[in-house]
Length: 249
Image (cartoon, rainbow, N blue to C red; front, top):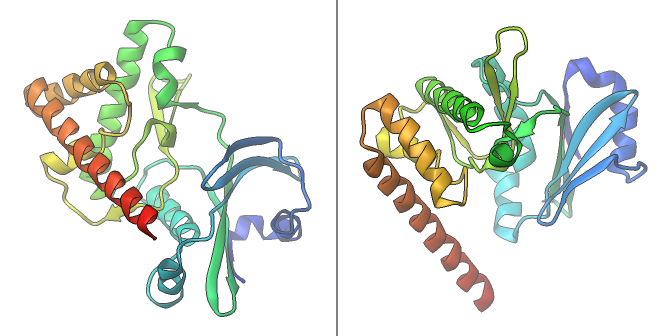
């Protein structure tokens, strides 16, 4: 096993080992599908534990030789984001397990943040006016992320937190599930639009984002929406191709 534990949390290493060995009871299970994501309480502090499933053989080899695992990237990218002034749940630890010389699976632990998810904004926001403020602030947030040379590659609404700063009344945002990300890039208009494609599945909600984004960058809403939907079609074709390949195996 390889591990990285933030110096602030070295004191909890024995407790983390219990979690890795299955000796714990989760407070909440957020997801138990491809990966397992749970909220746990350790020594009075709340954390999120994400256990990545075992990858295909080709990736198990790649993670040994020349590519970092998802858990490792999640930890290191969180450190980079925070250094760049982009909020994300604080990285606590990552663990990489090996079996018979090959990468087996990884675990990433972060602080728990009790914020709302952007995917729920239409159900949770008290009014259309407040929802507009939340979406407007989110677009500003993403523009600032892009200006910092950062390109998130997995921007569905379940990976974006938001909350209201009671001191200044502004909405604040944070990214999670960040193992797919590019740094040191200069995204163009089309690449920036890609960041909005997965935020909402509904066309009406995507149109709201396209309208707000278009105003800020000087583009017609229909042009922005066209490129968002083009990105969606490319992603869906790619997913369909992967499903067909997996069925043939």
